[in-house]
Length: 227
Image (cartoon, rainbow, N blue to C red; front, side):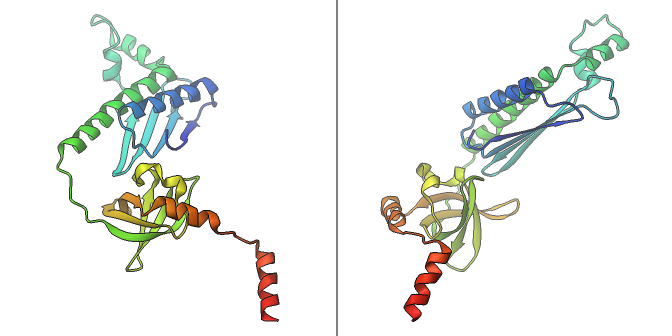
């Protein structure tokens, strides 16, 4: 995954084997779509039935154009598919009660895989909009979190993330770096769908030649110059 997978357990003990299973399932999603920006997974046993073994799984998948969410909740309808037609309702409910967290996780990721494939197909089938590339500079960047903000010529700030930076140049970006970008409206405001670094080699060399002095040393030099 481009970003770490966040795994949360609610109303149940954290289990290393379940967490590893979630991470492996999440990593498998990249085979279907390689621009995933985040993945949050919550495995929960509802409080209303502390003695039961019902498990709910929620997956929030971050994508360049928004987010896909899967809420997998066991249902009686699902359990009926697991028993013979001749079995009673009580026997079907028994299958539901003993549903394992491993199975709930697998089914939730199976559904997410299906939705992710649909999302990718719709993207490929829809006509590509002709976004006009504008120029700007990196205003802020948070490498560990995988996102930042650009400053436009008209003093606006536009959000961008690691997946939107072309040619894998996200790690080369520094504050002040000049870029070209295509802007679109996201759920939380303007965001850059595509970011291309202008003359990446020259900017990398310029950034490497700049020496950032510690504050106390910089202040000392400025005082001597004033004297």
